[in-house]
Length: 287
Image 1 (cartoon, rainbow, N blue to C red):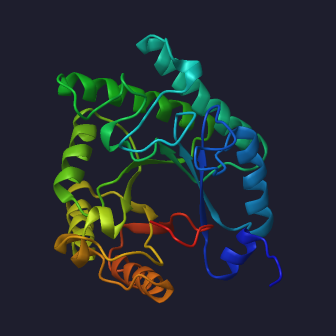
Image 2: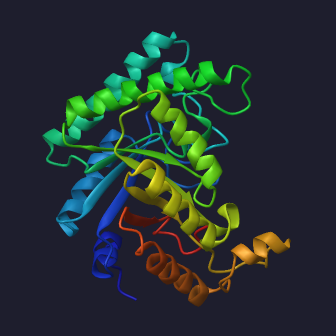
C-alpha cells in the first residue's frame, strides 16, 4: 500500500473540518506511548499542513488548558500556572489564549472556532474552576464562569470573528445539558456554539442524543457541534443490557461505518447541528 498524507486522504473522503488539541507545556509522549506534544509550535505546523492539503476546510482549536489530557475526570492546571492566585490565573488564561491565537492569526492560520476547554462538564483548571464533587456549588460556578469569560476575552481580542465553543460530554443527557448551560446563561457567559461529545457506550442510545438536540434547539437556540464521536471496530459485547441497547451496531468495521452513517443521517434533521467530528480519525479503534 502506498503511503498517503492522512489529511489529504480525509479530505478526499469528504472531511471538511479538522479539530486540533493544544496543550500548554506537554511532554512528547503519554504513559501509553502516544504522542501528545501538541504545543503551539506543533499546532502551527499542523495547521499549515491542513491549509496546504485542504485550504477550504474549517479549523477548530481545542484548548485543553493543561499540560496533559483534560476531560471530566481530570482537569489539572499547567505546572507553570500552579501557585497563582485567582486573579493571576484569570490573567494567565486570558493572555495565553490571546497569544496562541495571535500567533496563528499572524501565520494566516486563525481557526474558525475555538473550544474554551475540553469536555468541561466538571469545570477546568482545578481546583479553582472545579464544578463536580464540591460543597460550595454556586461559588464554584461563579469562579468557573469568570475563568471562561477571561479565556473568551483573550480569544476575541486576538480574532474578533472567532466562534466560541463550550464543550461538554452530555450528548445523550438532556437534564445534564440543561443544568450546565442554564448555569452559564444565568451568569451571562457570551458564547456561540454548544459542543457535545457522543459515544454510545458512554452516552446512551442514538434516540437520547436526538431528544437532547431537539430540546437544546428549542431552549437555548444555539448551534450545536458534535465535537467528538466514535464507535469501536472490534471488542467484546457490552456486559449489561443498557449498554447493549446503546451499542446497536456490530463491533466490526462495517458496524463502525454504519454507526457513523446513521449518526450523520439522524443529526441532519436538525438545522442547528453545524458539524460532526470523529475522534480519533487517525486511529481505527475509536471509542
